[in-house]
Amino acid sequence: MNKYDLVIIGAGPAGYAAAMRAVDFKKKTLLIERNRLGGAGITNGALSSKTWWELSRETASFRKSLNRYNIHAPQVAYADVQGEVRRAVNERKAMLEEHIHQLQRSRNDQLLDLKYGQAKLLTPNRIEILAGAQKEIVETDYVILATGSRPRYLPELPIDEKVVMTSEGIENMLDFPESMVIVGAGVIGCEYATIFSGFAKTKVNLIDKGDRILPFEDEDVVRIIERNMENNGVLIHRNSRLIRMEIKNGRVEYELEYNDHSREVFHVEKALVSVGRVPNIENLWEDAVGINITKRGIEDNDTQTNVPNIYAVGDLTADISLVNVGELEGRYAVEKIFGKPERRLVYENISTIMFLSPEVAGVGLNEIQAREKGLDYKVVTLDYSTIPRAVAKRNTQGFIKLLVTNDADMKILGMKVIGLHASSAIQAVALLISMDKGIAELAECVHPHPSITEGIQECVRMLLGKSLFKPDALTGRITCRVCQNGLYENIVF
Image (cartoon, rainbow, N blue to C red; front, side):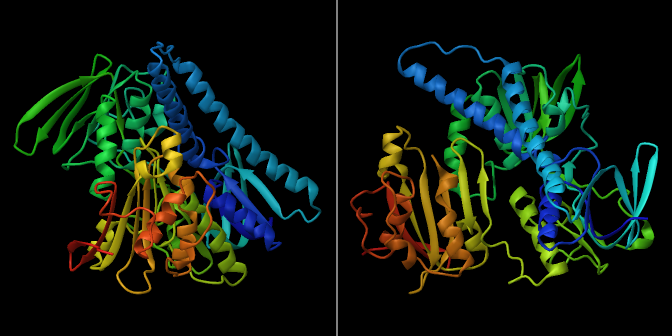
């Protein structure tokens, strides 16, 4: 029976990152994967959907450029787009596999093993691996569970992954549907609405139980996203509740009830259900192992479960379900097992991005969260029309919003960027949040010109009272306010 220092179950982003960190500690490690290396983060999750988004964005941009010169845009072939997405997925999986194989060949220590099969904890230290008809049992000192998640199914919906689909079935469509309804107006639902409307081949309906999509985002962010969706032909069913969905003659019939109790029936070709994800914990351990679970996943304390030698990372826990968070937790768990982390795992400086139109990136708190915490803060908002790079790109839709504490230190609480190059503009701020620093460090940085990050510097200078543009002279493009006791007041310099 093989004996390991560490066994990692699941080779998605969190498990793969944990394995590589264990190699750094020179520990004999086994990485077990049930299906595909890279997990849902590659095959039918982050990489695949974001490749779809990039191709959709390029198509929409190309169409806009041709319209500027009165040139008719060529037709987009679904098979070509789907083929490009699959090539991207296969390229990433091949790279991960090659990395492991080359690592095994180039080192004499033989520290890392990779096995494919269904893993199950028989005891806290003994694991069974089923690969077809073959069964193997290994022993280990420590275990990291990183089996990821899958789309949530609603039992009242006829999900067959052909007509009514989740993100797992949508990858296997044969052509752009002429119409589609998306159930769920969260991040993933809105991303898919952006993708399919961007190709201009599908009439998209989006069901939203509230009066606006993305209810966790500030209203000024949502306003731009909703406007762009609707300009692309998306019908947002606001204040609606799905009360019935059926497959009839290979198409979808669904019925909505609105807040005023009126009802309406719609017919579309396809439906996409995007109502969250659930952790993959079924048959992962024998009952006697005794791992505690909650409604949201495995109960953990700083990645460690109630069983001392077993850790859980990524989508299995109730923390943020993001690839970068899963990788962070995977590395951290290994450091906690075999070393001593420099500090406890924190999530306040996690950078996020929503692939919408335009893209939205953020770090730290937004205004909704700051108010919920009862914080007093200063906030400055700078429109993209004041940033030379955005002007040069002929795309000035968007803004930068920076929140700081309402005191002399002006420590950064959070930042949101919506618009061109949003994701590349937030890293310096994420670093300052993790360091619990104020804004002075950003004020005198020399940014490349022209660049979107110059807008961040202008926000900082505005809070310090030495900006190039003055809010009272560019009303509507620049605002600088203080929120105290839930009430706003413009800052006068």
